[in-house]
Image 1 (tube, helix red, strand yellow):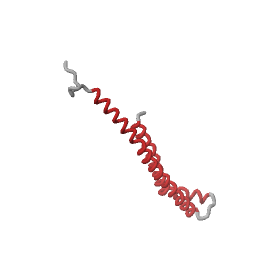
Image 2 (tube, helix red, strand yellow):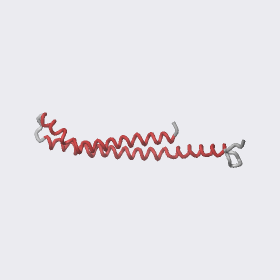
Image 3 (cartoon, rainbow, N blue to C red):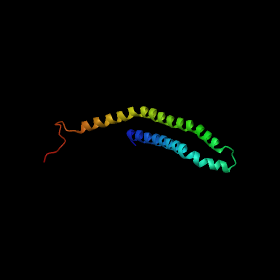
Image 4 (tube, helix red, strand yellow):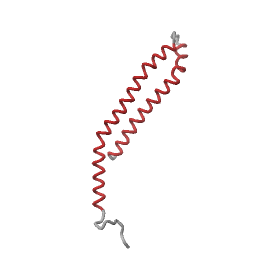
Length: 110
């Protein structure tokens, strides 16, 4: 796998994970209270709505901090690997320019 493909793969992995965490946050904030409050009520928890909201309020900063840390990690990993990609692209450009004919045209006349 080339260095460019590694960077793209790495970014895709981190961004997909971060976006799935954001989707989880949105899901929990919209549907979590309505879904889990009856469950806690059936278990016999008094003031189940307050308990569920407290759980989600505790989870939201944790999940969002994890998503932000993934984005920072993706940024720093990319910054570390970009010079390798640029060096690889420079080597390819040099090898392509050395293959061309001195006349400047790469077509063959027949």
